[in-house]
Structure formats: C-alpha cells, structure tokens
Amino acid sequence: MKILNGAELASFVKVRQLKQVRNLRQSKKIIPKLSVVYVDSGNKVIDTYINLKKAYANDILVEFSVYKENADTIIKRLNTLSRDDSIHGIIVQLPLPGDLDTDQILSHINPNKDVDGLSGGNFTPATPMAINWLLSGYGIDLSGKNVAIVGRGKLVGAPLTRLWKESGYNVDVFEKGDGYDLYIEIPKYDVIVTATGVTSLIKSSMLKSGAVVIDAGTASEKGIIKGDLSDDVRERKDLIITPDKGGVGPLTVAALFDNTILAAYRQAKLNGM
Image (tube, rainbow, N blue to C red; front, side, top):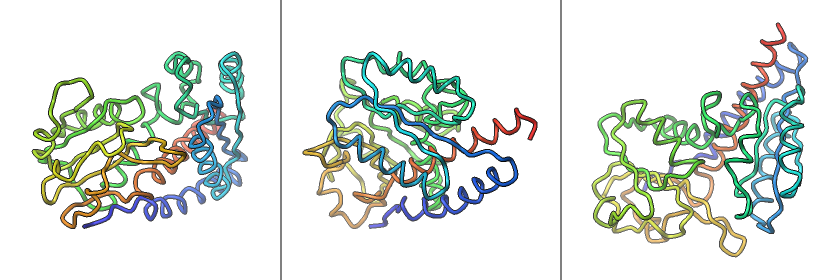
C-alpha cells in the first residue's frame, strides 16, 4: 500500500504561505484576515474543523475570527463582513442545520471573499484544489485514466467534476439514487474519489488492484470524524490510498488559506500597492 500523505504536503505549503504573509505584512502593510461564521447545531465536529483552521492561521500569521450566529443573525453577519475592507476571506462552516437554506445563505458572501470557492469563478474550491495538490505531489497523472467521483456534493463532487472535465479528463460521476450498482461500476476505474459522507460506503471488493483511492468524505459518528472507506479497504496492500487521518483534510485547510492570501494580494493590487 502506498499512502498519500496530505499532512506532509501541507507542511511544505505552510512554509511557502508563511513567507507570503510576512511579505504582505512587511511590504504591503496588509494583515490577511479570515472570518468563519457558523450556526451552533450541537455538532462537535464543527468545533474540530474550526479549531484546525484557527491553529493553521496562527502558524502562518493570518488573523482569524469566529462568529457564532443563529438563523436570524447569520445573514446580517455575512453582509457586515462582506462590506468590511479589512476582511479578506469569509467562510460559512458547513453543515448548517437542516432547516436553513445553505445556498441562500452562502449567496450573501462577497464573491471576492468567498475563499471556499463555492460561488464559482473567483477562487478554486478548496477541497478540489487540495485533491489536485495531493495527486500532483505524488506524481499521479490523470491523463488516460478512468476516473470515478462518488458523490455530487457542493463542496467536493460537483466542483471537482467541473474542474477535471474542463481539464479533459475521463470522469464519471456516481450519486445516490442514480440506480448504479457500485459493486459493478467502481472496479472499472483507475482513480476513485469518494465524497459522500456515508461511512463504509466503499468496500474492498469494489476496488481493483493498483487503484488510486482518495477519501474526501466526512461524517460524524459519535463525535468522531469518519470517511467513506470501510475498514477492509485499509487492509489492502495493493492500493494507493489516503490515510484514515491526514489525507485530504490538511491540504483542504491549506488551500483555504491559499485563497485567503490570494484575496489579500488582490486587495493590495486594488489599493495600488
């Protein structure tokens, strides 16, 4: 088994980002700032995600602020942050409680500050960027390979599909309710990215020898973050695979801050610096 160690790659990205932030602070007199907005739903995993981002921000000298809102105040907060020129990046920590319209709420983020890249256009979405970094870091070229993406979610599946199809890769997408039998379909593919949030969805018997398997799924099981791969997948010795921890996640955080730094540089350019 070959492990795709995203945490190791993220450590190299962090060194580069720290240099960039120091340059912004010293040469441009700009302090990059990222704001995270969330609605408390009792999901402890959200606290974990926010704390990981806070620690990363501290490491690279990015100012980090967190706003706990409710259904009645979140849009007002996003509008306020969107107008604040000192804030370069804004994210809404997902998932939101089920009674809230996620797309409608996200639409209130200034597109120039949407560093998760969910509104399209201004920034590469963070998790797809992370997956591209992961593959590139280990010299895995998708050209000529059959690629499957399992899940069509807003954070991973949909934007990753768009990016890879625009790059000319041979990509097929599978989503719950499509009627496909994954046991029959998935063994046909050389590279599989799964991002459904359904624990143990992908079984060992679905994967051919030598397959590249990237688990970008996240689900909370008794307060523990779980991916889409079943335990028997990780027992295989003939796969190229992300680890249970330290795969896509650390690089996604790094990508989020890459976009925040990019937003700060864009602001400096607008200011004629």
